Image (cartoon, rainbow, N blue to C red; front, side, top):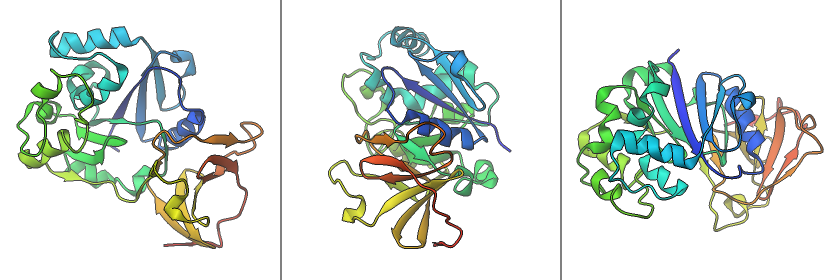
Length: 272
């Protein structure tokens, strides 16, 4: 199996359902998550989740040392524009891993190995095209991809010298560069990217998401399940309606505004 390290930079209070993200990340044991943050240190690390406690100021200096003092990095949110540089900025932490990447924590992950196979890592140089989750081959060419020409959006020189968010970690940045440069890339299928403009999923009271033992499903009709790679909740306000951490165990339902424990047997349900 290929070695993959996913780097997360997060400063401030984590989402109130962060423990559910942690659980879904641990289930994806083929991936190692390095979480640079100002809340938790190494004592919080477990399994494939490694916590590095630091400050935004220290992270700023790390980027300045590698990319130069002339870059604009004036807020934690601006870090999203620098995600495509992680291969160089965090070269020491990535080490000899085959792939590195970045991800969001306002998600619940399904079983990623159902959507990203071992052969995908052999064939593709870039996997995923959204800010929620992207992976890059740990090569000199891919680590410096962000510096290449972009026919379809912004280039790094412009983004790194201006304030504001340019979404350089996805469509107007690294994805346009990858297309311009002819990079072999693969999309991650069956993502549930939840809109913040609508309360209900699919405008239906009958649609919800169901997590069980490391797998994520969408249910639209009784006894019919659609596999999902991960659900992106886009900072949607959510309540965690579990009496305690044991009550939900490895089985819960995701409703439009809450997580609830759910003990139904899915063995009789049809997966489409």
